Length: 112
Length: 115
Image (cartoon, rainbow over all chains, first blue to last red; front, side, top):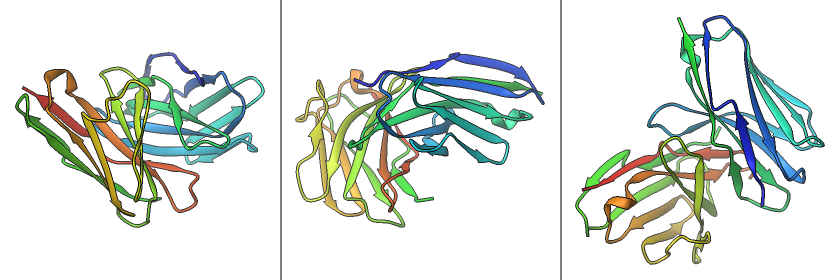
């Protein structure tokens, strides 16, 4: 069974600082990995998707890396803004499966 | 990206009544949709996989008679919480893969409160 862990559980930084969010998973036979953002009481917004054959993906200030062999992904958010305050979830999909296994998330607070 | 719409966003019901939550794929067809439950400060837990035109597949420990799932068309799946109790109060979210069946998209979620 795929176990997904996100560290830290919470993070508070001043505006402008770069954010580093970590996700680790136990089964490296993945199909892809997705990073999501969740605002309080809301659904999930897809941020980045990394296929198993890729090492990283970038979108604006966001960059996600993937190291399958070590079972890790890192989400970098450059020059954080108060609007980046949210919970960030990573989800892993195994090869041959449609199910996603989620981490518990990292709750980010960016202080103005 | 694909759009998944979920309705209602929040609902309050009395113990013993049933509540139906709808999940629609707005700009694509979804033969498979997924229903999750999320407890406060916890991760999403998959409840069931909804298959168009056939029975849903439930995860271990999920009562299929309590959480009825119907996927009658390629754009609509419904979750009915039957005989709701306060312990069923939670945040329910649906998802579907877009047309490439690679990236998952989620609805806005439904906050269910049973009083």
